[in-house]
Image (tube, rainbow, N blue to C red; front, side, top):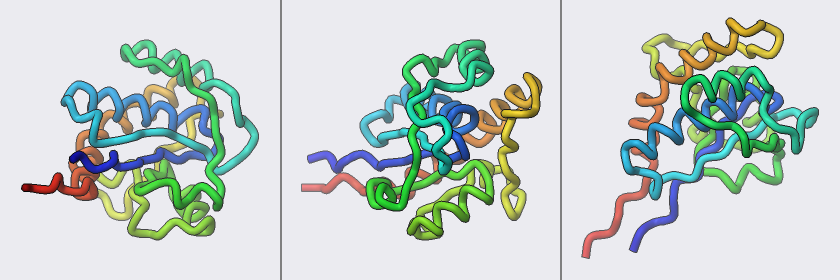
Length: 164
């Protein structure tokens, strides 16, 4: 019997730029490795400005350029009442990490997206919203460069399949 998938949610501020892009980058890598059954991925923002809206057009364009799709993205908000629905939170920056802890997430449940660059403390994924097109390429590169390390770390949280 297979355990339920590990529930992982990517968190940024508005859920239209960084976290949806992180979600599709990591999801694509998991699909290519044939590991989709192990994980359930979503993304959310700690703010409520964009609930129900699609990805920022610049983020969607960057995804498309990289053969990924944000066409079906609808922004959602992470709230204290939803914290228990998730196993692991992947925060894009320290502010959102603090917000998650305030909402009741345990620090050991929170990974920083850039934890895998060997820099301590992990740097933030800067919000590209006001940074022009160049900021979205930089954000994509940071996400891509950390995705494999994140995936290796997530395997530590996947419950082992029982042996009979």
